[in-house]
Image (tube, rainbow, N blue to C red; front, side, top):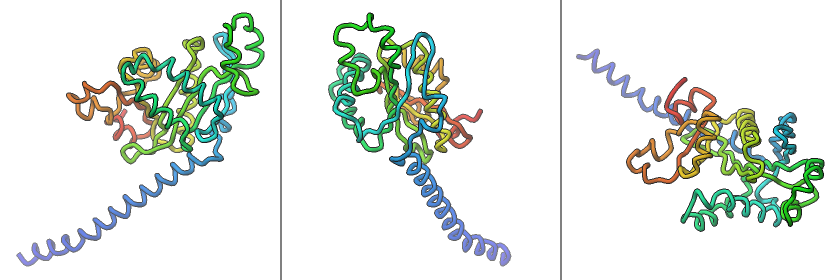
Amino acid sequence: MFIVTTQLAVETEATPDKEKMKRREILEKKKAIGEIIRAASAFDNDHLSAFPTFCHYHRNGLSVYLKSGRGDKLSSQLKQYIQNLLKINMEGPYGSDWPAEEKVKRKEMVAPEACYIFAREAPDAVTNRSDELVEGERNTHVVDDGGPIVGFVHYRFTIEEAIPVLYVYELQLEPRVQGKGLGKFLMQLMELIACKSCMGAVVLTVQKANLSAMDFYRSKLRYSISAVSPSRVHPLIGLEQKYEILCKAFDHEAKEVLEQQVN
C-alpha cells in the first residue's frame, strides 16, 4: 500500500507539470499559426509573383493575364464591377436571400485582408473580337488602362479549427468566359498559393442551389464536404442550411481535422 500510495503521489505531483507543458504547447502552436497567417497576409506580399507561369492563360480561345489586388486598394470602378458580376452570377442561387447577402459581400470585398487575383483579357484578344462586342461592353468592362476584366478570385488567409487555411470567398467569371478552363486554372493557383504560404487546406463555401458550382468543385476539382460544414456537424439542422463548406486538405493534420479522413 505504501508503494502504491507513493506512486499515486508522484503521478499527482507530475500532472500539473504535464498540464502546464500541454498549455505551453498549445500557446506556442497558436502563436506559430498566427505568425504564418500574418506572413501570408502581409500587405506587400504579391502571391502571384511566386508563380510566373500562372500569370497568363492562353487556352480554348481565351487569352487573359492575371494581376493581384487588395480590398482596401480597389478603385470605385473596380468595386462597381465586382458588385455587378456578383449580382449576375449569385442573385439566382441566393434567391430571396440575395439583398441581405449582397450587403455582406460589399463589406467583405473592401476589407484590408481581402486578397484578389483579377483576370484581364489580353489587349490583342479584345482587338480580335472587337466586332463581337455588344453595345457598351467596352466601356462597361475596361475599368482602367488595363485590359477588360473577365473575372476574379477573392481569397483570405484565416484559421479553421486551429488549422491555417486559404479561404476562397469568391471565384467569379463572366458568363462568356465560363467553361473554358479558366476557373480550374485559378483554383489550381489558389492551391499553389496555399501550399507556398504553409496553409493546411483551401476552404470555400458553395450554395446548394448552385448546382454547376457544386459539380465543379466536387467532381472536377475533388473537393470534399468539410467536417465543419453544417450537414456534417449537425446533419438534421444542416439539411435546413442552404450552403456547404468544401475543402481540400494538404497534410495529415488538416485532413484529420477538416475532412475527418486520412488518405
